[in-house]
Image (cartoon, rainbow, N blue to C red):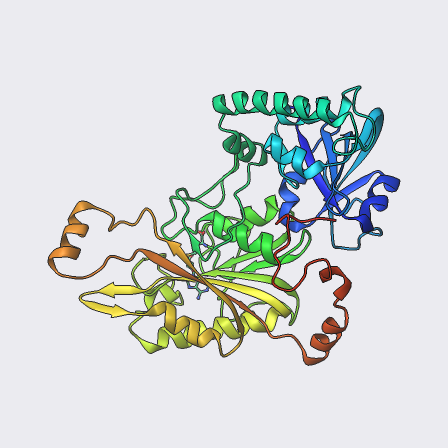
Length: 424
Ligand SMILES: C[S@@+](CC[C@H](N)C(=O)[O-])C[C@H]1O[C@@H](n2cnc3c(N)ncnc32)[C@H](O)[C@@H]1O
């Protein structure tokens, strides 16, 4: 299906786009750009001058780093385009787009892209004419007509689910409360939901997308059914998965307390460790799943994994650790806090996410009844601790030296960026 994408630029980058026939955006919107195919409609809004350019047509697939020269790694998700003799530019872009219910840096469904193209191709539109001169009245009524037409079509389609189907990717979470109704997404399986204690693939996807780039190395020292491997492969990350008892040939047998990798060589570590001895993963004597979370040795042993993770991670890179608390035989153990305390010996905190626990074996009427009768709570969430290996002192200062303050100058103090979107 032909679709479209509306890129954004500023005065600074407008010429770079138009002269090089290249459009790009940041990591945040990468997945949408990667769905683009030759022939798809493309548009460009200049957020400074409020001009809209287009329609253009994609002449390449959407790719990571088609050109690394023009924007460095600032806008690495890119597509090449061709102009045709109907490509034009008009003023008053923001008003026009809001009239049509369209936003920059979003996929456009076929009927949305076509409506926008029709408007730009109207013979009465002279370049730069939308708000500025006598033609504007004609265009305003055309916008109103297209807007009415789009509203009618949107009544019959669930456009946001159509767009997520096109993406086949989960959204990136923006709050510290995550709740995933299913274990996996997309068409290919990620890990196995038959594996007791399998991790929701969405969690790993969110960490991989936020904290790594294609080609980076991700390591999961307790890989279980291999969810991390499957997510990373689909996202074009290099990945190594270990487990004390491998469940598939691409998982390497290894004890997480000694990881056979060099110091400072890894870009992201993800761990969903046992939360105590509540699940019998396997018979292996060295499995952490044999140690009770009430026993201090559980934390001592997991601390060895934390030290190993800190050793193999590159400075400044991230570890995500998923862990849940325990309530067994009338005793509460705050496993999440205790793990967090140990993590802070090696890492700097980034954030703590609360992940809703779904498909619990205790999510039955009998258990809810017991929770009320015996006055306790069933576990409703897990913690995702996100921490960072400290930067080396010298790289901290050189990084500071590289901040380009000019890029922040467009937004005055106390003023939010007007678009909320990423722009070139
Ligand atoms: C919660 S499961 C991981 C689930 C996995 N992320 C998935 O999606 O399938 C915890 C895993 O830790 C592994 N494990 C326990 N002790 C270990 C150790 N000492 N070294 C490496 N892996 C260990 C278990 O075998 C189990 O597969």
